[in-house]
Length: 177
Image (cartoon, rainbow, N blue to C red; front, side, top):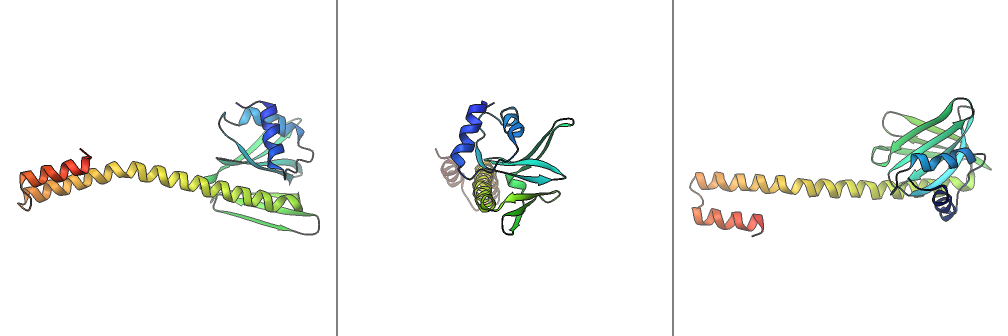
């Protein structure tokens, strides 16, 4: 769990943070974030008649509202599940919508100057997350591929297309010996 000072430092490093009226939400972040989870973007706005903090990390997008009477309301969307993000703005304020295939979270009254940096940082984090996921899938798919190739080689040997020596040689190559 990061400290409050570490969270504030990450928000400061982001540079485009618009965190109007969300001090309670910022103070709650250390309890929600994992130790090695880093903040990539932050902004704030209105949803359902309350002020919400939007936080993009390297794993997810969080929407937080710390209500004095209800407690902490939290909506989180893992980066690899976000399907689209829409935004629009007028003179001073705008809206960010995040859709994960099932849910849509709409944040209104977002300061215009903080919208595009938040969207770009979130898209960058989504891109990095998806490449990390696809790399882990290809790493786990490789043993299955070797197993299927060994099965094919054994089948070829059984049918008489490969000798035992050829089978052993190909098997050695596949296993990297």
